[in-house]
Length: 304
Image 1 (cartoon, rainbow, N blue to C red):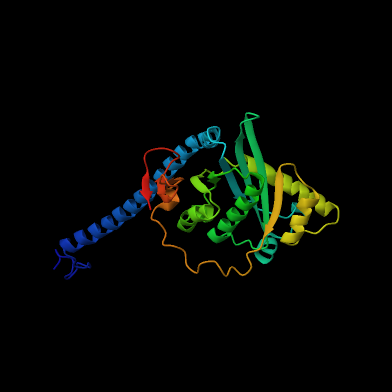
Image 2 (image 1 turned 90 degrees about the vertical axis):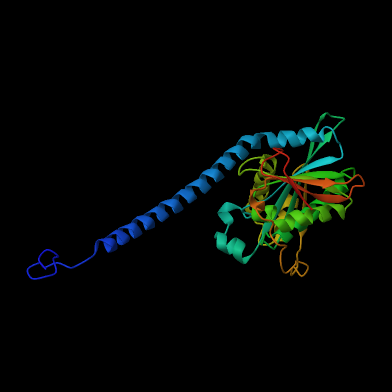
């Protein structure tokens, strides 16, 4: 009893050696599982960071490459698109929640670029579309693109095919927009050839510059006693202080009765696809989209 620790004078508790070993093994296994989980997260984050670095390195070549292609085809147009983050002039704005959550204003910007063979230089048009609906879903974006195309064709009737440059917001990258774009263009007897998604802060300088002019126009309207509480008033302010080479219009989505109740099944891994090249047969019929993770890098894979 004394030797075992549980008898007279021992004062201890009996515990067999296998039980102690099992308990220790369990703690070590739990610790190893924690390390494995941490390593998995590290691997994922490193992979995302490496991909970001590759896209960043390629991003400076995107716009020049797209513009270079315009020189070979005067019917081709590059569209750089984005939403203006804050519509109202800063010093006259309500809180962000009040101004956008409650009133729901949005301002879409699109910069169209084509090559002018006579001048040997690019020709640029800016489009601004205001709306009292700020829920920037793929359906909202698709309608903005459609109105942009209608306005553009009124100015550039010879335009036939388009490249699209946008940021990586979900309304631009989702499966629903990718599958809807060919029909949006073909219904106007046009083709979309490429959709390139740029890194944050890259590729949209021209559109961002026009947004700065929008801000100045709205500031001038407010300084003169004007009101910019809805889409019509914002449109009136932009028209009152016009900018050369710019077209202003508005869009009314109503109650969105035509918006599908459910989106198409998301294509697996699409959020990491930054280059979508739309393909057509010899008769001009859309056949599929070639997906690449990086701009014009590798053969990619085609989905119908």
